[in-house]
Image 1: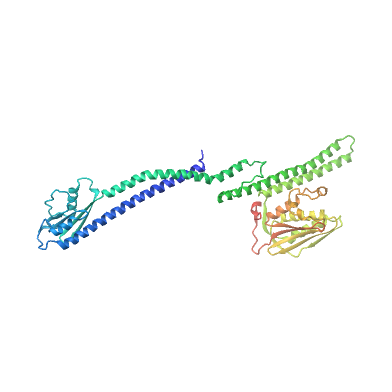
Image 2: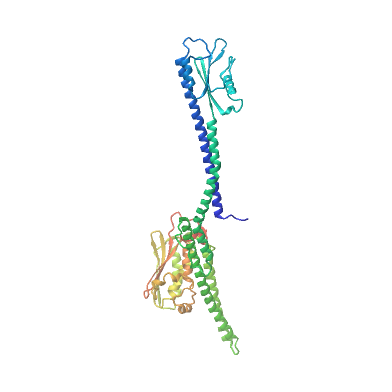
Length: 483
């Protein structure tokens, strides 16, 4: 199906609107003109009838004798009337009527034998005398005044001529106006769509290698500028995602290449002649460790991918944060047995929060593992805290600390401020990424306070459970993400 261009649709719609408006206006003018003219004509007939009635009262035959000709003074006055008219009068018994006066504008034929004619019959008789056809062209007013009946007649010829003139003007002006409006509408629509075309041209020019291009703003139109701003924000997100993908691809390739190279080297060394059974077992053990490390990294990457794509299930239910923190504290104590490192705990009683205890345990384990790994000497402490409507677990160490310029970057994938040292500890730089992701999936967050040489403090915050919280809610990553 071929779609019409927006310009053609707007021009066609505007053209239909103009045609309808102009034709409707012309029709309204014609109708109003006809109604006003008809009203004016009837008012003129009423006025003529009023004058005739008043003259009849002043100049009627004082003797009251039936006559066919009005007195001379009355006749002189009646002759000057604007419209054609006729006057009848009762003529004795049986409601017989006689023609009392006939204006010179009426047909010259003599009207005789009226008889007991009703007003309607008299009307038809007079109209027949005026014209045998097209009686609609005349309007007649009948008025009874004592023994007299007054009939005033006027022609609609002037009204018809005016209407014909209006119709002719409308037939000429309406198409001309519509055509001029269509031409103007096309220019206006083209001018209005010009910024939109520029946005489209810029978008078509943007490819994978031109993600830094942006649509120029302002465009001159508020709606198009809003669209351009939205497109620019989308391009910024796409560019960041593309950069992150490139970085992730490079980092993942590097991280996978290292263990694979190590495995290959161990395998080649073990295959060399003269290797003893002990040396073979050592080589296989090294290969097994690299495979475990690689498998752990792949599992972490899959967990991050599922979490970011809304496919990771996270519980939403009340649990005791202190109990989970105590379990992690015990793990930290076990991890530091062979090292000169003091592990401190400050639990401060039960604290009910809303979240997933297993995911929370995973987050705290990552935080405490980093603290124990990178603190050569001194102390690592874990404490439960509460502030307003949030409950938190604080993990503090006396390690080397982190510079303020790195506090956000440490949560990126494969971020290791000291790569060689991290690799010696077996880390792939994904622990803090997973920790922040799992915290956000529980409507929580992780805060960092650190200064070089004075250690670091990582705190996991989760919403405190209300008294009425008790319903288990298993939600996906998307539903649980922070606003």
